[in-house]
Image (tube, rainbow, N blue to C red):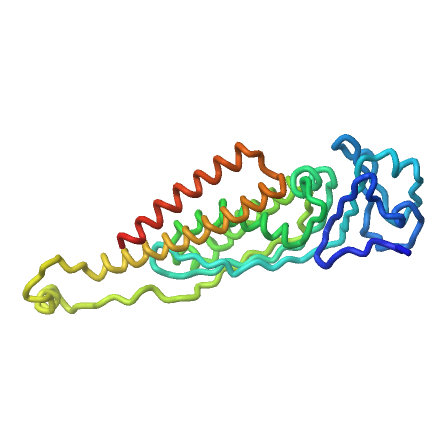
Length: 278
């Protein structure tokens, strides 16, 4: 006999149709105080109670769907997400986010959608596609390593990212207990040749040049552009994959999905063409 909500590992919420409602929901049982029953009818929430409270058959049968929600605080670690900066330095961005479901209506409509189960991993996918790949990482890739060496600027950048995450979580019906952003410089810029003077540099050039040899700076710029293109390509492919998941979970309309996929494909082809030429 069912005695409570026995959910899979990592499940935050689970939805049942009217004819699927488990028998334990209709009975009074001692449960986790953070577990709640959300009754939905016609796509709207009309009642929310603790799972351990008495639930009359009349309430259960009067709803179209019932959503079980775990509102306990969760902790998620993300990263380090690797990017390359214009000055050749590699950097990692790591996040630690503590959150919990707060607004069941926003959570149901703006995050869970039509899914039967919603997992911690689904939150991670949304953060990586909607926040990191879509907004944060492209902006960070335009900054220089000196921006992150300056403590004041680093804190300002981290604060802006924290605010963006909190605002996004709020729209999803999630309350953030804390957001921590850390940066780590993890590689040295490409090595370049150093000449004492122009005469020495000229003397070291080949006597015959079929093609003009690139200067060390030009080589470094090309290497950096290649790194940036490869990083952008990786982010685009990841965002494309997550967009496909959203569509298959019926979170995107056919029109929106088609438009996004066309944009992804166009940019991916542009970058792959540039990389082949290089």
